[in-house]
Length: 296
Image (cartoon, rainbow, N blue to C red; front, side):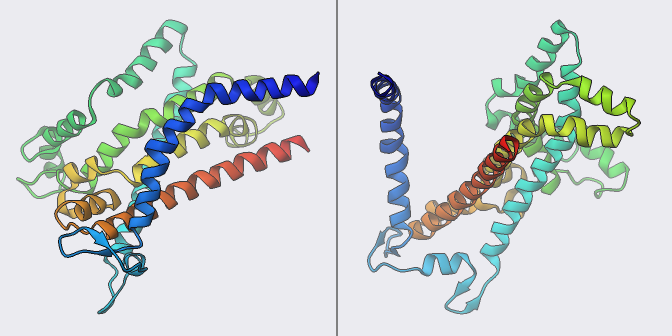
């Protein structure tokens, strides 16, 4: 009977998930296989791809060219990873107090503030990015204040540049960290923190030993949701950074656009996907290790 019930449950699961899995395989898996295959081909005379099969695209991405070592693309890769990590760190610094503040609010105010957190999702990303262009442009109040403080020359603007890119990235990805972290903070058992404080633990140790282990799943989920898309972000660096802030997303767009080097663009896309999968794999491994240790 148990075997029949298990088989029936598995059959029901396949029937339920089958259409979604088929959709992913056809419209996600198959295109990714085509991109992986194209990354090993040679660029044609008109920007397309063809034989012979080669590994030069990945060697070029690593910096090795026919003329020697060129650090351009390794720098773009490192810059993208650093920018994604910096965005994640800033979102953690800003989002953690915000999540705790929301969780301690009364019910009606909590709902209002949560709504304000997700309000940016109601507006298109392009519109939000163009809004930052107006706020940081030369002559705008923020730029005049920065010039008065000596951060920039009079008449210059905070846009384009790294600061504009950082502000745009944090603004766009902060809700992705706050929401899963809030879900963990809301279920936090404050009696553990009170017990640690009653035993004489200072506030830092109370947070480290009594609070952080409880909110770690939310922190990990939020950090992954920020780091993965921020590393391959295209729109914000392109519109707020210009030519000064070339990142992986912009470089891939150039290869499929103006440069018409599809095999090299496919290789860059594969490396970007590999970075995303590695980051997701690290999080999965840490979560699984935590479950195993907890089970012991």
